[in-house]
Length: 318
Image (cartoon, rainbow, N blue to C red; front, side, top):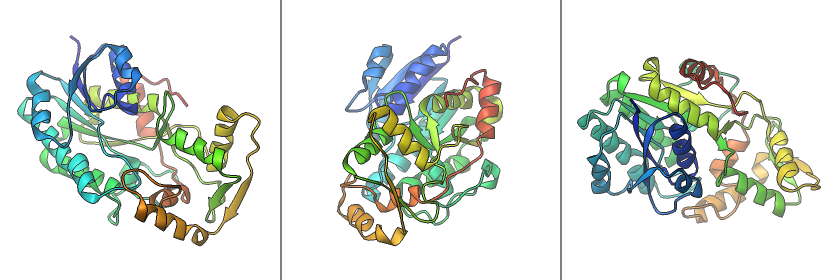
């Protein structure tokens, strides 16, 4: 019997890839869409239901159908923005959806979180059980992801939820990180690296197909219940490698010139971008982005590989 799956955020970048992937795995998929809808989702022919994370009534209406699993991908994701908006979309909505899953006897709630719950500092291959939540998180994006994960652990039975924590998602129609980085390469005469790593720190890429495989494994594996899993490609890519690879693919013939500077030289500009921006950054880097690119975000992906193997979806994309 086909698993009946609701995927929220189905019209977005990760969500539309997830719909396509789950359909290929033989699932009966319903996608919650909001505003813009990616052509990838439309092409799947999957059933669509309009929904809004900030509208409780529309979330209730999602459950007029029956599901075996809910994969919750929809979220507010940005370097900048008001705390209240993140709280509503990334915390209050998570709680409501999880409670609706319990009320309607949905077997599992798979929550797309982020590796940012571990914090933004140097890592050296730690596993999930060695990675506590960042107790100092002040930015609303990781703050409410952390609070949501804690709430799920406190209010749902372990077998009813799984938290999937991707790193920097790319590939298959990326509308987020790749366009932003390519625009930077086009308009800046240099690639600037800040801090002691000088561009040799790991840029933690997670191909969107790896994310989808891990979401699927989180749905089907009994032992995944109550756990968190980091999604990270096995290939180690530094920031130096990343920018050179982007230039070769998107700006052929472009010579990438790099400069390494102390962090303090960019702090005033980063502070200004963070203070003046609303929903999207006015310019790069913001303070949050600066924290990201100046640290070695190098985690273990052993649990991801193990889950994919056990679920029979182990062909890694990168």
